[in-house]
Image (cartoon, rainbow, N blue to C red; front, side):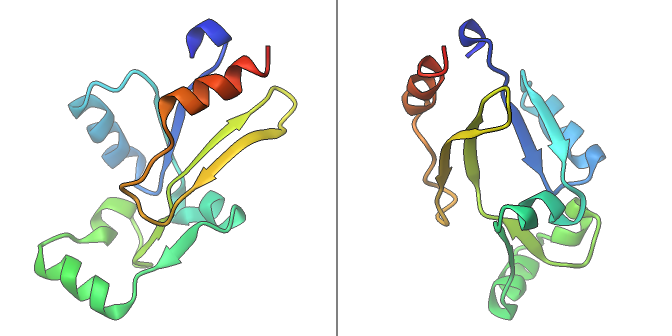
Length: 116
């Protein structure tokens, strides 16, 4: 990515302190920005609110989303990957509601090659 002059940035609804903890714990080599209240996710139409059953399941597992996100919304973004060129045009967008399915790194690199 760096060879193409690109930067990787992650955006998370977690508070800056929680994001920093994750970045440090996993030795991430890229910036993790905090999207307080999922405002950016909402602009992209990616925020979803937990249904009661899912919220109850998380609570039974001891996962308190409000502690991570700093609000009581019980809301998360659907994961998305974007390649955005220097003028702000989205050149590649990949979104999948199944958070375990992610865009292949090769697809991202291919998209970056098209920008040069």
